[in-house]
Structures are given as C-alpha cells and as structure tokens.
Length: 283
Image 1 (tube, rainbow, N blue to C red):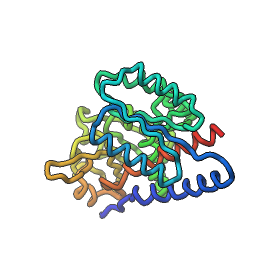
Image 2: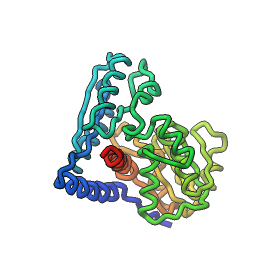
Image 3: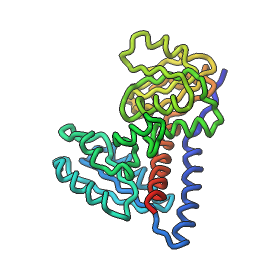
C-alpha cells in the first residue's frame, strides 16, 4: 500500500483565500478589518520565524497585525499591563503570546490574563473548558486544524480507534477532546508509555506530537492507518523531518501528512479562522 499524502499547505491556502474574500467584502462595505496582536518575548530564532509566518498570513487575508517584541527581561506585571491594554483595544480581535516563554515567566498566569473572547490560540482555561464540555468556542489551533484537514479529505473519524502520542497542553490534550467530539475511541499515550508499539499497531488514526525526529518507525503502523505527524525536527544535516519515519510509514498508511507542508500550515490557517470568528463576535 502507498499512502495518499495529505496536503496541508494547499488546504490552508484555500482557507485563507476564502477568508480574504470575506474581509474584502466587509471592508468595502465600511466595516473595519480584523486585528491580531502578537506578543513575542525575547529573541528565540524559531519563535521569530513562527511570528513572521503569522504576520505574513495576516497580510495575505487583509488583517491588521500588531507585533510587540519585548525584551527577555520583561516582567510579568509589564506583560499583564500590555495584555490589559490590548483586551480593551477595539481594533484588536485576537491576542496571542508566542510560546515558549522564557523559563522565569509563568505561562498559565499570562494566558489567563487574555480575555477569553480574544484568546485566538484557544489556550485560556475558559476555552479549554468549553471544549471539554462539548461546547467549543475558540479552539486550540493545531488540534482543530488537524480535524479540519481530515474533514477536507472526507475521512470519516466516527468509531475509529485514534491513538495520540504526546500529552502536551498545546497538542495532545486538546487533540484528545477534539477526537472524542468526532466520535473516535481515543487512547492517549506519550513517549514514556510502556509497550507503545502495541498501541500504535492497533491505531486506525495515529497522531504523533513528541518533538523527536523519526521517533515512530513505519513498521509499527497498522496497514491502512491514517497518520498525522505534528513534529517538526531539524537534523544535523539541516533536513526537516517529523516524529514519524516518513518513507517507511508511507508504504503502510492509507493517508499521511508530510513534514513540512502538513499540519504546520493548518495551525496558522486555524489561527486566522479563530481571529475572524472573534472579529464577527465583536462587531
């Protein structure tokens, strides 16, 4: 079996084109453009690339972006003050804090200061709680983007056995809740799970997000499975690979996401969707 490659880059571009048309119509009718505020603390090169990609996506769809680059020594109280200003700024529909934060800063405390209706990353405890209660509002971008991608390819997730490898607050945990909403039977594991191979061998849908290059060999994957690789890892030779060994998994899976070009673009597209949703809620 040779897998069908799920093209997240293409799907994300279609989504952004549709949003751009909506924004164009709204602005032409006299409404303001949606606004997204991004806060970057410190000068982590990877984070700077992610923020640049989000800023570019805003430009593509006609959003106004506000970028705040703060020194690494910025205190929590200073961050709180900025967030409060943005919470009360009618030009701003969405606020995101680029993660990870410097170690001395308390992530949850900072995220809690963002108004839930402007939390376009979907990480505020209120929004996570709504997802858990089956009444989602603004949803975490990566997990929602994965669901959107699978739906685009008409993959019926109902009653599939889904295995999530990775239990982070950013991907693994919200992914589990999204899959339950889709009707899957879900097993959540992590890189220290004993007999991990056994879980993966029985997965109809496998979602891996551990941040370890080629961590899952293709030989573990059930024939005909759907494989979603969230990992982005740079090898010593400069190549970018996922958490799943792509070439061997490609020979066994029915569908597989590439790295790069799979989940990453969908995360950004979902951020744009969330910002548009927040914008309409604020009109």
